[in-house]
Amino acid sequence: MTGKFLSLIICLCFLTQIKVYSQISDSIPQRKRDKAKLATTGIVKDSARLAIEAMPGNAARRSAIVPGLGQIYNKRWWKVPLVYGGFVGIGLVYEFNQRQYKIFLTEAQYRQDDPSKANPAWKAYTNEGIIGVKDDYRRTRDLSILAGVAFYAVQIIDAYIDAKFFRFDVSDDLSLKIDPFIHPTQIYNASSPSATTVGFKVRLSL
Image 1: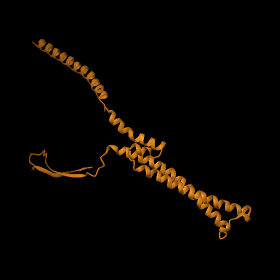
Image 2 (image 1 turned 60 degrees about the vertical axis):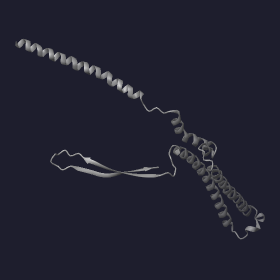
Image 3 (image 1 turned 90 degrees about the vertical axis):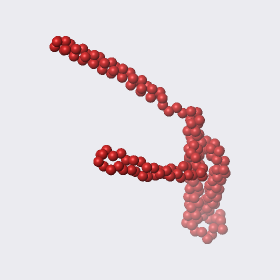
Image 4 (image 1 turned 180 degrees about the horizontal axis):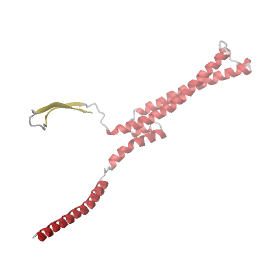
């Protein structure tokens, strides 16, 4: 009787080990299949979304090649006159200061080399005054060049940002919605009184 009982226990233990081993061997391929499934089911972007995501780069490149072309690409036609108006204004400032710089530079050179060729209109100015005015015009001319480079970069950034926010709704239709709610609080102690949380949710639609 005891021998049969021991044999039955041994058989049960053997069957249990076989079942556990089979479950483990089956679970490993299943995990691999799950990982493979997750790897192949990533976010799929359609052509429309890819085109929208490529818009900022395309707009920036166009504005870098031809100023204002990125604004045209973004269909912001009204910005093109502003872009070229800014460049024209900076160019006029550069041209004026460059012209005045040459005038006073020539005057300073005449006073140093041949005073007889000096312009009588500048008699009230000393030699140091002429040199100081010349340097001021040169400084302003150099700053206008830096302003042109900065404005060139700004119009590229403007085209990039404008295309970046193309997918967002920036209309004037703004709405504020308030939703009150009552949420019962779960109490784990049966002797404690029940509690209820009262509040509200605020949603702002842009």
